Length: 89
Image (cartoon, rainbow, N blue to C red; front, side, top):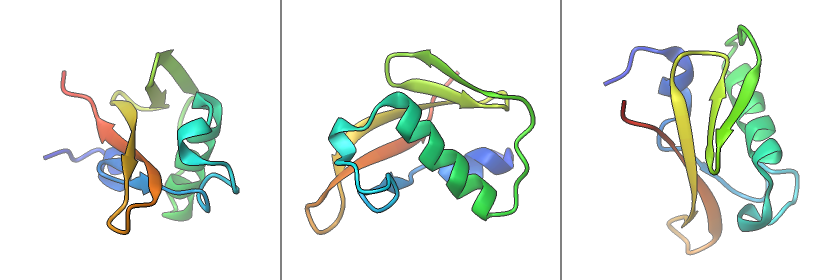
């Protein structure tokens, strides 16, 4: 279990079109996914230190040490979504 507050907010989150400003989740770019995650973290009152970084295909960092991966997924209602997970070191 992580104690990093950014990871605590993002691990297991499903981003839908409403989180991605109307963009179909499976067509969203890495930058759009990073922006949605940044907004979500900031909505929790967490101030991000440093800058976000696109690490590789479907992986990114948000200023902390943890790296996240995203993948196409479906929510409980079967709607397209993007699943955010902390990568294992």
